[in-house]
Image (cartoon, rainbow, N blue to C red; front, top):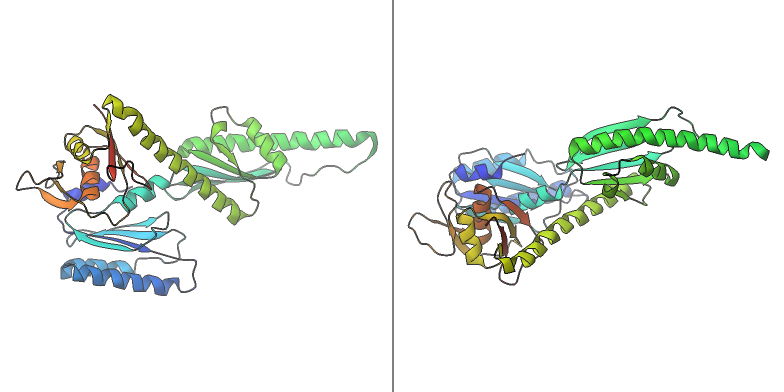
Length: 350
């Protein structure tokens, strides 16, 4: 995964471009082409150099409009290789910006939404297990039980219970194999969630055989069709991402009385410049054009005022994120402002 803090070693200006990619529509390729042309026109109007525009033009041929993600984010300078990433969610709108400080919040939001997880399709003979990490399937495991065609016996009379119990014993044995494979996969990718769908009895056996520490990670999905299961898993991950954000925002409110958190914009920037921020919580709706000032090269200074001649002006959100990344602070992009005071808040190290 690209270290976004390395971007601040590069010489700007930066073109920060986000383009939606509606792959589900019939004319997706045509729409994408038009949006890239519009972004190029906007960059040219903003004063982008011919060299930077040439870098931008070279990206078009490398973009795949058929992927199932929400958009494309590109960060481009005139002299360096562009950074291009597929976004996990629909960015809702296209944005194009030419500035001294890059806008990396779309990439951060996409990365934090790509939580590692496992999706399991379970039946009475085994399971299909898919480990998802960084937004794509990292590993796929098929578990097949000892008996490939298992069904309840239909014999009648006194033997009926014996046949049923023998079948259920086999199902439980298969579930034990699935649980072992699933546990290994979960630990290997560091999964935050395990989404399980399939035969109700087989799912129950699987859950019973999972280690106690993995059971809280399990979400049992009611959907049966493959596409519906994947969509439900995506929703479950989105809910977990939102819960993570809510916890951080609540922590800010809880810690403010103890002066280990702040929602005051000036205080946040000052703490960032001093390396005192443990986690920066930031909301960026793309329209916030509040200005702030930051240090040149790798200087993490951040301020609402130009206190030195060598400071560089940028958007408040971009300046705050830059300082956070340069000082190894966690950055959390949230869907709503963390407080009424502005788009940034911080949990402090001290």
